[in-house]
Image 1 (cartoon, rainbow, N blue to C red):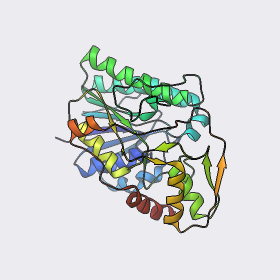
Image 2 (image 1 turned 90 degrees about the horizontal axis):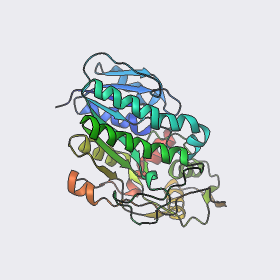
Image 3 (image 1 turned 90 degrees about the vertical axis):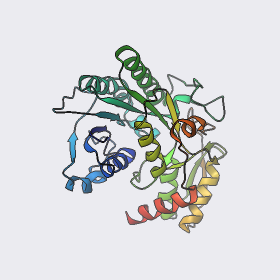
Image 4 (image 1 turned 60 degrees about the vertical axis):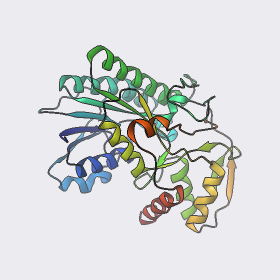
Amino acid sequence: MPGHAVVTGGAGFLGSHLCERLLKDGWQVTCVDNLVTGQATNVARLRDDGRFRFLQHNVSEHLELEGTIDTVLHFASPASPVDYERHPIHTLKVGTLGTHNMLGLARAKKAGFLLASTSEVYGDPLVHPQPETYWGNVNPIGPRGVYDEAKRAAEAFTMAYHRAHGLKTRIVRIFNSFGPRMRLNDGRAAPNFIKQALGNEPLTVYGDGSQTRSLCYVDDLIEGVVRLLNTDYAEPVNIGNPEEVTILQLAELIRDLCGSRSQIAFRPLPTDDPKQRRPDITRARKVLGWEPKVSLEEGLKTTIASFRGR
């Protein structure tokens, strides 16, 4: 039964959609965000709901909350290369100290804990598609290491609390996702291309554009998270869309859907940029009965419409 949920990073892209869904499902929600990459406007309309509370706080620092808490969903972290290159130490801290603090809160309140991990734990994968049993190929000292290794440490913290303290934990490994409320300057491929295409600016494709991504629409992603929340399954679960598309195909599709005159501009490939990214969702299908429903084109149309409005 729904109770009181604490969502860290709740004013971010995914966190705000999660807060909205939990309220819809009958939860009382405390949204915690320091607004480094989150935006207060993402949850502004939720403030009229008496079951919703916003708390501006950095979870890398100690947090005490009064009253009963039933579950903690830890979504706080910069999540785009632009953000974690701008805030490298903050990214490391929120994945390690922040995760430790939120696990401590969950343990003190005898609450459940759900960690938002990432497909970046697989690094530049040598196994394709990526199953949860793959341990990854990560450069710990590269520019992406602050995010990749922080999330890997967060998973280790979570499993340690599960095994040592019997804490009810879940780990969702989130693959590339998109949808309304992504920041215009997010830096990831889909919002970048949409912003550029709507302005008829050149679409910046890194490398030759042959690297692949698998993009999951936000509503599908949140459905997977909620289904995982309602289980006792402690091992990591991939949530993402197994439909793979090259970056060049994505750029051309977005240009067409925007009716844009943009040209393609090729740029050097960033350091440690993954060449392939596609989830094996066998476990999600089996454990959660989940798979994505929204097609890439359908999701992009909705996302483009929301960007036009801004």
